[in-house]
Amino acid sequence: MKFHIVTIFPDIFESYFGESIIGRAQKDGLIDIKIHNLRDYTKDKHKKVDDTPYGGGAGMMMQVQPIYDCVKAIKTKKARTILFSAKGKKYAQSDAERLAKCDELILICGRYEGVDERVAEYIADEEISIGDYVLTGGEIPAMALVDSISRLIPGVLGNPESLKEESFNSEKVEYPQYTKPEDFQGWEVPEVLLSGNHKKIEEWRKKHIK
Image (cartoon, rainbow, N blue to C red; front, side, top):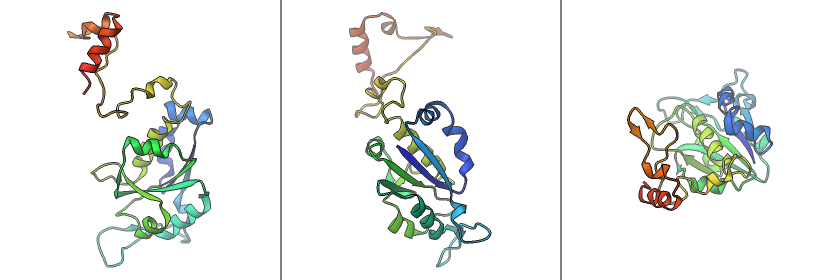
């Protein structure tokens, strides 16, 4: 799986993607993450990517030209292009599973007051929102998509069994889980989990699914 991230802040991603499961997945060649600096595709000597909105309004809008040129340069026939947008479809686990079947994803990170609507109309294949709240840009949503999709790629998780009981693979979420110590400041692990009786443990877990 290859991810292309289009952003004006390419350095944001280095620390997160370089660590833990995502970092190992890249080293193992299971995923490939390419960061593209949108300013490299401007035609302005000042590397400007934004301008005032037609019709007036507060703030600045990201221009269509740099985004068009960037996507045109990196897009293949197999790639699906996603624009992060407040008016996009709400992202869910089912979307992660659907997108994990793609060969390549291009993730466009907006900034400022938004992105020229022609990006949504003519460049992106779909718009996605990760929640009903306002962020300063699309970089955090891009990290969320890469993370949620990557862990579905075969071999990325150290223990593939963990995918079988994922929180959002069913209508319910999860049962409570505990680890050592058995007693911490008087807060004790339920006795049934220490019993070794797998049938009773399974019954307890089903009863306490939230």
